[in-house]
Amino acid sequence: MLALAVPNGAVGASGFSIMSANEPIALAAVTGAHGITGELRLKLLGEGLDALRQHSVFHASKAGGENRELTLKKVRSDNKGGAIARFAEVEGRSAAEKMRGTVISVPRTELPPLAEGEYYHRDLIGLTAQTDAGEAIGSVTAVENFGATDVVEITLDPVPEKGMKTLMVPMTKQAVLSWDAKTLVIAKDFADQ
Image (cartoon, rainbow, N blue to C red; front, side, top):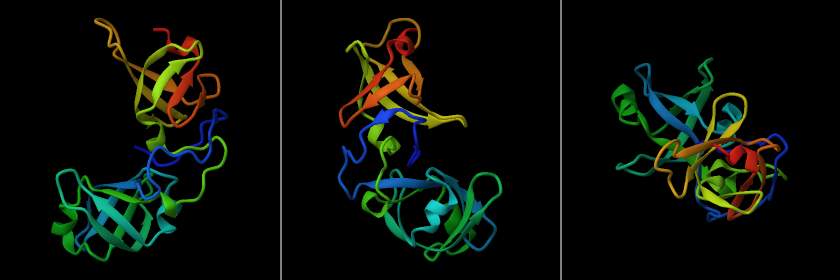
């Protein structure tokens, strides 16, 4: 799950929120330890390294694990699209290895306001997906980015007996015509399988 993206001209409501103002927005995920001093390898989920540098305290959560705050001491690029970070509370390689799978986030209120056409991926997940003809086709279950643009994954409802059970739609102005706090509208041509 990425934190913030711009949909290449798609028309969206700025400032809408289907989450509470303090709901955490993920900026990175821990992929493992780096070295022996407790540094962490991070997969960046937001606007990159600069988004992390704007904050000093983060919320760390792990499925089935503890939630806690982490204080950033330093962060640098890993020169592979990720980052290497040092947090005050993580001492030694053993502690760093236990952090694998942890999501690093900040409250929404600590992020800059959204401009017209911008969105947080988390705001799109769970929206009802429908065509521009008004036909409900399912719901948004994920937002991915494979390099060119964000891609919305829609789980079809009803689920077809044969064929694809999900639909991948690029977040472009030709494919995603609009969205609001409840509905994502896609061009019918992109819904046809």
